[in-house]
Every structure is written in C-alpha cells, then in structure tokens.
Amino acid sequence: MKYYLIAGEASGDLHGANLMKALKVEDAQAEFRYFGGDKMQAEGGNLVKHYADMAFMGFTEVLLNLRTILKNMKACKADVLSYEPDVLVLIDFPGFNLKIAEFAKQHGIKVCYYISPKVWAWNQKRVLKIKRIVDHMFCILPFEVAFYKEWGMKVDYVGNPLLDEISQFVPDDHFKTKHQLSEQPIIALLPGSRKQEIERLLPVMLSVVNQFKDCQFVIAAAPTFSAAYYQQFIGNSKVTLVFNQTYQLLHDAHAAIVASGTATLETALLNVPQVVVYKGGAVSIAIARLLVKIRFISLVNLIVDRKIVTELIQEDCNPQKVAAELAQIMEGKGRQRMLADYAHLHQLMGEAGASGRTAKLIVKYIK
Image (tube, rainbow, N blue to C red; front, side):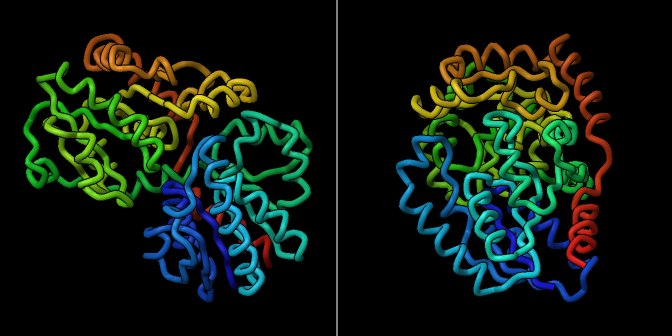
C-alpha cells in the first residue's frame, strides 16, 4: 500500500521514522512519500520537503513566514493528489496538518492522525472539526482518551513512541572519552531544534556556566545547524557541543536545562533532574496567555497533573532563576523528590511498542 506521511519538526521525524519501520513489518509492500527529515529518509521512500524548511513557532513567527507556509501547503496538496496514497498519515504539527487533513477528506483520501493536536490546551471546539476530517486518531498521552470521549469521539491510545526510542538506546561507554569530557558532573543543555528557540534560550542557559565551576556543560546540538552557528553563542565559554547524541548525553548527565517540548519528557524518562525553560515572542506569549487553558506547559507536569519540574517561562526565564532552580536539583531533597516523582511518571506512561501498535491499527483500518 502507498503511505503519505507529514511530519513538520524534529520530534515528528523521529516518530515518523519509527512508524515507517513498523509499517514495513505489517505491510511488506509498503511504499512511502513524505514531508519529514533525515531519520524518515533513512527508512527509504521519497522525501519531498525537509522539516527544517517548515518549522515556525509562535503566532508572530507564523505571520512573518505566512507566504512560505502557504507555498508549502499548496505544494503538499498537489503532491498528495498526484501520489494518490491509500492513506494519509499526519504526525503532530497541527497548524499545517489539520488543513491538509481537511483537503484530503474532500478528495476521498483516508486520514490517520498519529500524535493528537493539543486541542485540550486551547480552543477545545476544534475537536468537532477533527471528528469530521480525521478517520482515525492515535493518541500518545494517557489523559487524551478521556478528553476526546467527553466530546463524543473514539480514539485509540497507543502508548508513547518515546518509550520505543528509549528502549532501543544502547549506551556508549566511551562517550566521555570521544568528546574529551572529564569526570565532573555533566549539565546537559537542550535548547531545542528551532532557530527561534535556540536564539532565545541558549544565551540564558549559557549564562549560568560560570556559577557551576565544578561541572561541565554540554549542548545537545540540532543536526540542522552547524558548529559555527552554536559557537556564536558559546564564545569563550568552556562548553562542549554534541550532535545527534541527545540520549547518550542525557544518559551521562547529572542534570539538565531543557526547552519546553518533547525533550522534557525524554529527559524525565531517562531520569535526569531538569529545569524547564521557555521564551516566545512578546505578542505570541500575550495571545497564548489569553487562549491557553492548561496549568502547565511541560509534558512531564501535564501527564501527572501536578508540578514535578519547575517551569521558567518568559520573564521568569532569566539567569538568576535558572541558576537557583538548577542548584536545587543538583543534590539533596530537591533532587531526590524529582527522581521519586519520575517513578510515578514511568507508571503512567506504560510500556514501549507505540509504533508497532499504531502500524497494526493503520493497516487494519485501511484493509
């Protein structure tokens, strides 16, 4: 069968690649065409557009890049029609994907949505549109099933694909040697994979380096940027860059400062105490504060429905507060409490196998 997948950011590329791998197990004749990234490309098929040309965050950034977004959307619609897939598989990225879903539905193409849009966070009435344009929704967060049920929509809970990826991770005992790291405690810096995130968050993260002289700082760098790009922020600070080894870095890290997003959950599942940070454009944040109806922004806190990790957002994301919160989780009761709370998170998340379960359901529903 022919599958058309759309992933618009790094996390979607990761989950899309694992899903493609699982679909090949269920369907030996599987053919793929997709918007995605390097990981999906490694699984075969045809990459139409890389997510690096698509990822814009925040209301202001979307407006500034609206012409590019609309151009990408038009090209995507034409390509989907030309390919005539048996199913369109949309992976997160709701601003783009829900419009493509509506288009596909109008043209009689089956639509499966893997990783639900965060409709529970704001404008919940969007569920009514999703019911109309999405044939099958596969959720990865435990509380989403009950949420959709309240709106009269049946969805499939498949578990979380991050558990699949983490279960496949094999630690490298020579990681520190390869990167000339000492035995000092490692503080991992995860500033995100988007240009706007990195430029807003990395300088704040790096501002605390000199306050933790007994530690070494390592940046989990996004493969879409060069070392020279990161060096403009690092300057003369003694900070190491590591590309494509985030799980290995977290495996060896004592603590982490993490941009809000999927990485907060990855960090928690790998049992690394963390401080969560986020900064957006002033207009984007003002709009979000009016619209968003949730108590937390990090997945860790959202899943357990209480504060486990500290979230430093906008004006709170400053050198003083980041340093103070980091100090709290380096040792003592603050660190012990967070690790104990992570154990509860593990129980709620369940077992690995989300990609396999989703692939089985997609093939079953198409047939």
